[in-house]
Image (tube, rainbow, N blue to C red):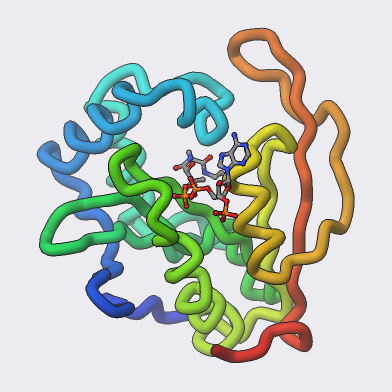
Length: 189
Ligand SMILES: CC(C)(COP(=O)(O)OP(=O)(O)OC[C@H]1O[C@@H](n2cnc3c(N)ncnc32)[C@H](O)[C@@H]1OP(=O)(O)O)[C@@H](O)C(=O)NCCC(=O)NCCS
């Protein structure tokens, strides 16, 4: 399989997943969400926080062009009643190798309500069924307890720790915990 078609929209209960539009309005919204909570988003942006809404816009415009030839994304904004709460989906999709990686973020006010746990099964269905992946990974900073909990609670196996893999923009050194789930371990919810 060399190409794949991303669903335009995925609906789970009251949540609508659809790509975040690459517009100035959304870029500013995302910039504001991240800047308001740099302490948590440092795990997402260990290379350094967004410098401006224009930088966010360029990132989403680039993604909208459908990625690089080999590595692909199927990331979705999480909307409830029209409000953008965060983003979840697959990145680093390697269609030859049939692998991909789940990623997610939520704005502060949307946390602690189990939203990511509710949506992970839909993203697994997208990966294992629609995109025919063999394996899905979740990699997170070893100190990112909230993210690690999602991997553990959703049945991902800790396959190893990539020690001192990342040098963050603030000079600190961090390890990455690598979790994985095989299609044969997926219980197709
Ligand atoms: C990762 C993220 C989406 C989690 O938000 P959430 O889905 O609402 O998750 P919660 O805040 O409910 O935390 C999940 C679990 O971790 C636990 N947890 C969170 N922070 C914790 C901490 N500092 N110490 C111990 N446990 C913690 C919660 O109690 C919860 O446990 P439970 O599921 O047993 O109830 C959110 O923190 C975020 O957007 N972070 C920034 C982006 C990011 O790091 N993305 C992941 C990159 S790999």
